[in-house]
Length: 220
Ligand SMILES: N[C@@H](CCC(=O)N[C@@H](CS)C(=O)NCC(=O)O)C(=O)O
Image (cartoon, rainbow, N blue to C red; front, side):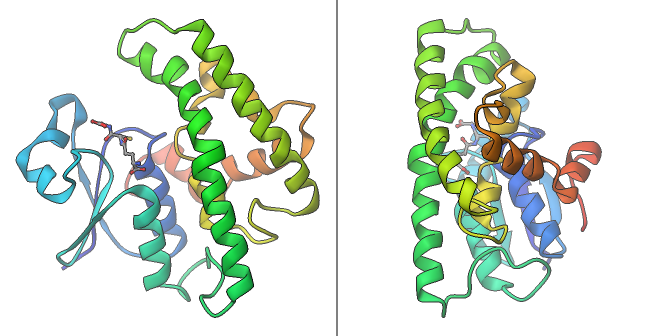
């Protein structure tokens, strides 16, 4: 049975990142649309796949897994030598340690404040709620402080976990590309030239650009 990706319409969510990884690793898959507008993600059928009733989820011949980062890691571990390699080999203990370190940084230091900003400028407006300016300012300041640290890291290396593109870089594509269209240009400010260089390259990744232009599903 073919591998199935269950995801929504949203270009900025985790489903798009899984689709990018599937394409970069040349893994054939079937895209199954779960329509959030119709609340299909809260249906008993989908909750059997994802008990939190969220997207995305993956079904690999009966093996069902959810959480964007866990899905991508599973795909990389299952197909390490296929398509683009997106993590250091498991035998590279120090490379793995550096990679794990930045996996935590993305989730704890980047994603948390980025989500605060995204709530105010992407999700609240989407659902007709008003942006809380104080929350937005706090979120932008907090994210800016983290990006100051990123600037130092990216001054010394090409990507966030080293000199090779990895899953950690791609995880930053969850929601954050939606900030600039919503008026928050924090990822490309002139005072952080290395962050801007890294970010511009990331959002210009051909597979990602193709997904944005053509929508799901995409092939490498
Ligand atoms: N940490 C999860 C977040 C999943 C998530 O919040 N997905 C959104 C769509 S992009 C969703 O399902 N929202 C509906 C809800 O939380 O009820 C992941 O990365 O997969």
